[in-house]
Amino acid sequence: MSVTEMPVAHAPAVIDAQAAAREAEARQKRITSALLYLDGVHVSFDGFHAINNLSLVLAAGEMRAIIGPNGAGKTTMMDIITGKTKPDEGDVYFDGSVDLTQLDETRIAELGIGRKFQKPTVFESQTIEDNLLLALNVDHRVRGTLFWRRSMDESERIDRVLETIRLTDSRDRLAGNLSHGQKQWLEIGMLLAQDPKLLLVDEPVAGMTDVETHQTAELLKEINRHHKTVVVVEHDMTFVRELGVKVTCLHEGTVLAEGTIDQVSQNDRVVEVYLGR
Image (tube, rainbow, N blue to C red; front, side):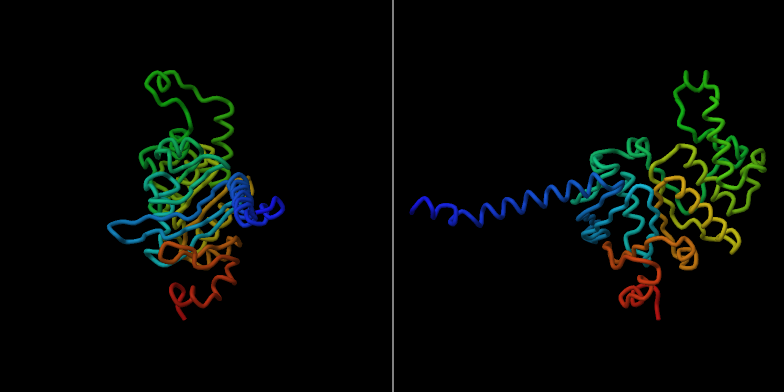
């Protein structure tokens, strides 16, 4: 074989290596540019594929609505993000470089990922303001608790949160006396008091009146305007439409469709498996 023939013989291998290097570089750029990056995620429970090749990318400051039928994998997806469930395979990165699959729930929460479950959990025998104070990121060890005094920054943060959740004038009311909708707002406020980078909100308007539903949409949009990344899991399509954000529909643990609410709601498969005809 002549010298001039050598590069030709090895050209396919060289091209494959270069293509692999370019793909690895592109993948790394996608990870580092995203606040939340899931790719090829699988989770099985006793042979049932709860999450099946799920890929989802959220930019910093984005709000995304997640819809889908019961059993679509929405809750499991949030369990994976918060460390409650470990994926069998796949990538889960946060803030450009942090591999969430290697961390426990406490460490993930400390990174700035807050989760609100469907049923509000507040300290009903405490005032609204005291609930927010209890949620602050402070030293909760015995010595830290005994000598803790609220700083000016913390007082200002509480005031901002109260204004955001529309409860400034009710700061001294007992949380147990709030309406269902107000308790939902208070729990969102308790997460905001911890200054999260990513807020996961599960069915926030379930059981709310029409007025409260509209106010909740405005509240979440305001939170998003303050550069918080928000993921909202919801079944109320009127509420999702009011949010006016990109929608991801899950089905059988994978992404079925993505786009505007109009694009997704007109997708034949989404209509078939979720919205109905």
